[in-house]
Length: 67
Image (tube, rainbow, N blue to C red; front, side, top):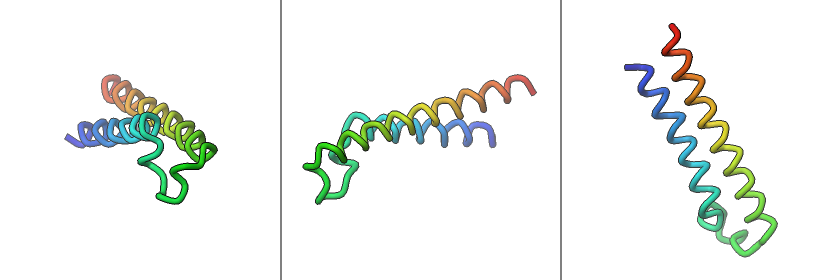
């Protein structure tokens, strides 16, 4: 059961990264929503968070299936 919670947690982190990538304006503070550099940085950070979350979920799935 603990394994399921870990996978769900990392999947939620990946979904957060996806949201940050798709809607970077909604992920920023109100005063930074019009700044193109802040939007670009948020999109880049969203991609990084999504990749890390997906990679962590894959590692958990593989280690749980092996042991």
